[in-house]
Length: 450
Image 1 (cartoon, rainbow, N blue to C red):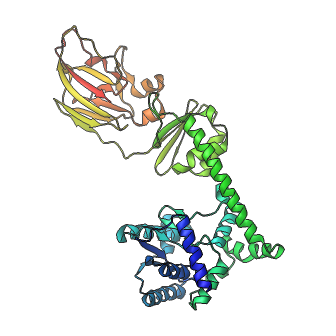
Image 2: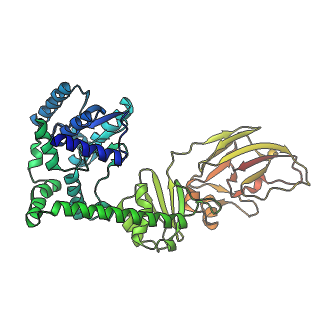
Image 3: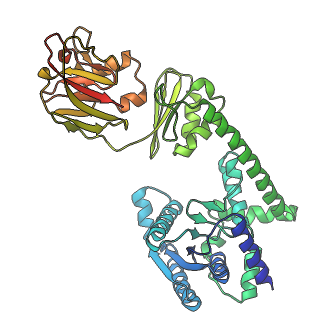
């Protein structure tokens, strides 16, 4: 039977792509349309433990409620649990300043993520298929995209799985006819108002008239581009690993923070590879590439990361919550700095013959001059101190500029202040002259960063 061949093809695709574990519960996005109904029934026939997820966006008046009622009846007949979310999508779009399409997408995937956590789902399956993939390729092409945008959707993206990418709309509808199943039709899909509908209703049928093999040719081209994109990604990843450096000169690069010399960025494509995974927009990357060789510092923020261009180098690091001041009390104490390094405080007896540690990671202060408790905080605008070995006070910002502090160092720079509000130590740079060890020193406070 046609239905058995269809289910076998889907089963082989799921297994070959390692999309699902048959022993775990699976969510299925159920709209009531042919694709999602077919997906729910197919996975149930393949003996997956499925739960249906339906979103009512209230965008099509009575149709939206009709689709929800259909999904409830279908799931009751199939013996499948159904979880329904009701959204006021137009109001949400206005509040967030996004399009209706984007609002529905955000609400939908937020619902999926919540259900994955609450219901212990291994993934949520959506009914995207080959024809959806072709449409997505054209959408990306017409909006301007790189090679990856022409390869279409993948079988898995995070917790979202697409078991139908091995088949197309015609086969899905044939599967439904063979089973004698009904489904709902979304009237908005029949109007050529948005780009995807224009491509589906006009462009692809026209191409199919010119060449009956258009669909197969496009799928083959997307597959070839996917292979080429993966190969190129491997080359770029190897190049990035070769040229990325640690944020500090003595540190190894990491996923969370790294720097790279501008001279090693040999093209806009390489810069896209470096920055797009960190949430920076394509337009920002393009703008940054045009300014790589200028002297003026440049800074961009994504949701989770910060990027800074400074003195011929590009810095990237994860943004952290604001660092709150921490007190260090007399005796033995420790804490974690904004940079993630550990600061420990201890006290020692001191004799004149001892040598003051020369490392910038250690501050040796005359205890008699220190008013406890000490406070460790981020630098503030207008902070001043009298650096050891220099005459007169200086703005902390000027000191950092004169000593070529990087954007990352400035962003995470802490000072140690005593109870009088005076800066004792610009951490990992210089102590204040007023707290230096002298011949009359008998006890010291040691602050060490490591």
